[in-house]
Length: 360
Image (cartoon, rainbow, N blue to C red; front, side, top):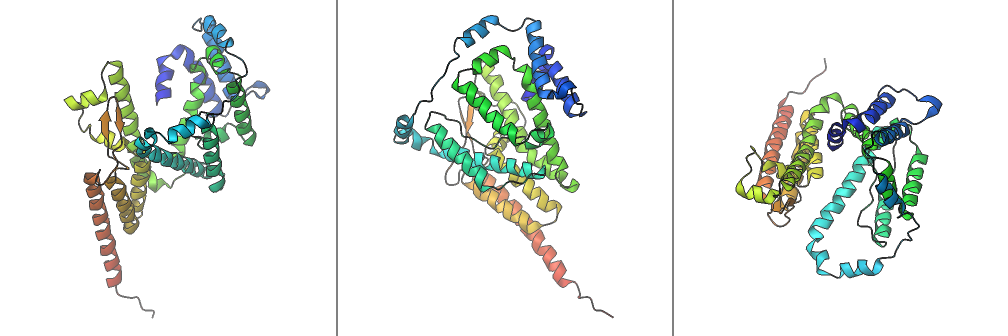
């Protein structure tokens, strides 16, 4: 949604590229000479920005002065020094769940690719992610690699294996030669927003298109935690812009009905989305035993604070891990499990009490 907001925040720059992207990918219209729609959109947006005089030639000159080969610097010493410091143990309860979130996100992207007709083995992509993240860390990167989201969208615009290779080469070159700021100074962000917005549209649409129609309510339920995370982020930005923090306002009492449920759904929302969607699917199919088992898993995760538990710290909400950290939510999921187990046993009893059919 952020990209949609930014598009309409600066319509003079962003709506022309958006129109080109929509014509290319919604209407499946090919541009003359086989030009890619994304390239046409970015070039048109950049040209319009310069024509309107909103770009800064001084910024281009300053960025151009930074261009030059920047050899990677080995940071293994600093890395091992950090491992021996107190910080690694202090933040380990955050590091481990974040690593799990990355793994889950990668698995979801593999599933998205399979739903789009392309099946990949699980082990090799995850292994490459892990090795890539560790190698990058030895050279100072704090960003873990993950399987890129949006496979259906990229496939829809004609991208194949070569696209990923070209991406890697392109970003490797501009990073090694310090060209990132130069590109940002020449091409406004609004020129490329439409492409990312298109990918988001395709991913959201796939959630409904690649699932049975009767499972559509489960897709909606699975979106609740994601909407909560998005809404909480808006609150944080708003309070920060107003010179205060979410923690300060929460201590005073935020006048939003059910506010405490927003950070509760935000905490561990990737897991919660999967769990709630899975429970909903099994209930739709009247598979009460499976719904019960998923509820028990949710109760265990809640009890130890992996999902739902949170605390305010400044303008952030941080997870709270530990014994009985989220016992209230665990109790709620145990109620889920009890109800579903009761219906499972009731249906099983009804089936066993039905008289056996005899053939004439």
